[in-house]
Image 1 (cartoon, helix red, strand yellow):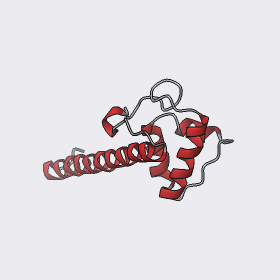
Image 2 (cartoon, helix red, strand yellow):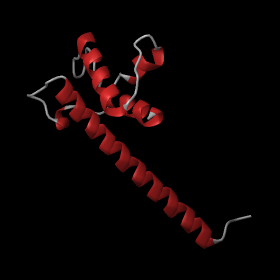
Image 3 (cartoon, helix red, strand yellow):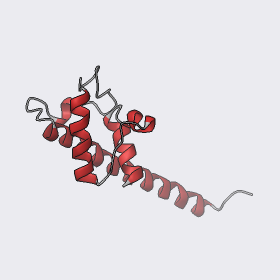
Image 4 (cartoon, one colour):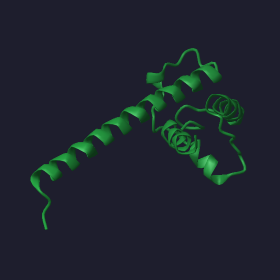
Length: 109
């Protein structure tokens, strides 16, 4: 049985609004994380526009190292109240990019 036209229209509008709010929320979080990376690691010559959301943070991409990972982990703990463990394989995956870090933060705060 097909839904009444108004209900179908309402559901589409709600989905579109939810998706727009979700994208806006995540875009803000991406920017916050990029700013945190720049501030915590004293990357004075880099702007948030220079950091690609889906590019690797370590080795390739931004080129961070293990010391940077520790400093970034401490900054995330301070800003978002999340305790990060380098022993955890899921945590290593979360540190892959700004996007994966944002997804982790969003899911765990």
